[in-house]
Amino acid sequence: MSFFDTHAHLDQEDFAADLAEVMERARRLGVDRILAVGVTLASSRRAIQLSETYPEIFAAVGIHPNSTAEAAAGDWAQIVALADHPRVKALGETGLDRHWDFAPKALQQDYFDRHLRLSQERNLPVVIHCRDAADDLMPRLRQAAARGSLRGIVHAFSGDAGMAEECVALGLHVSFAGNVTYSNKKFELLRSASAAVPSDRLLIETDSPYLSPEPLRGRQKRNEPACVVHTARRLAELRCVPLDELERQTTANARRLFGLES
Image (tube, rainbow, N blue to C red):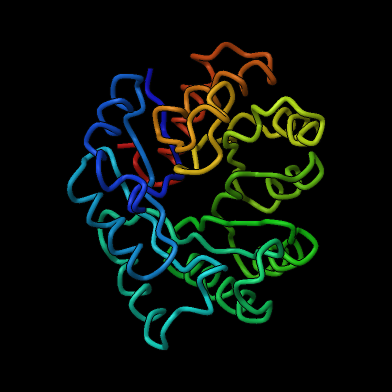
């Protein structure tokens, strides 16, 4: 099998001591493509460095909404320059976050718009974060789609089926992380949404080191790319398809989105 983990924060300190072992565990389980996602200028640079070290890794560069208040005046211009690197296949992580109070709403909106416009200018997919902010995020995605073609991923999707369907209609892919495996009632709408996404717009991810899937949740604090197999297995069950079919489809989707088909 060949799985593509479309969202991992492998540059974080959580992986500093044993990244080589993490990568080997991923290979053994067939996870042979990973998108390392930046959240600041420094993090984006580290993601590129990882992509230059490990052939399985590609990079996304951007400034996370919760990091926008920390960004220096020249950071955005340097993100724009990094987007030209041959190992960079996406922009972000960007978006909106209303759960944490780390950055003013207007500043998050400004940086989100910058990422969306750069995505459309460079024809690079954008990696979108949305936490407790759908009412603000969706109108901005509609505006961007009215302006031109919209390509990207709503990552670690946490909305309902209606939101997933609109994201697809706007041109986006929808990616599911470990929270889709959680069995408690709180995630019932998310599980329903996982079945509503067309097969050609479906992606999987870990969001490592966060969102460890069941059955590892609570037992393994740190998530890692090898664990994407648990998420894939649960998604296959929810969508009533064989695991190997879901693996082939999600990997093909990711390769096409990131321009890796050849």
